[in-house]
Image 1 (tube, one colour):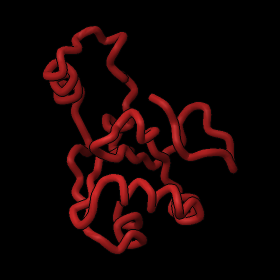
Image 2 (tube, helix red, strand yellow):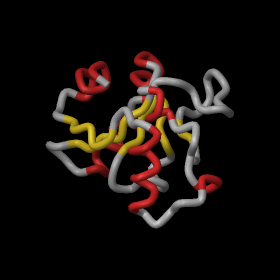
Image 3 (cartoon, rainbow, N blue to C red):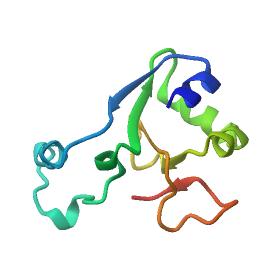
Image 4 (tube, rainbow, N blue to C red):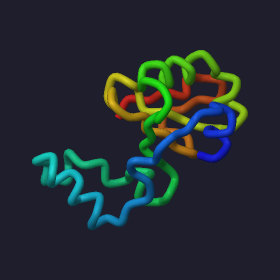
Length: 111
């Protein structure tokens, strides 16, 4: 996260970081989801490998575009992102590849 913040050069806020399983389940319960088959039980938030972030100095759309415009930076700092269509008001970023990732492929995944 610090490497992303430094490369971006603007303030970012972590809105959700590492979570206990209890907190993780509560987040989904608050959304009305209690069926564990519909909850990502292997979320990278549970292992301190993911964060949800928002920019503080510009719009989410501008930050999303910056990420898309700088694939070489994402490659260099080795970050992976949830498809922005699934998280339109925040950016889910993780430090480990998603299951179907292939080296040199997209760093965006669908949850």
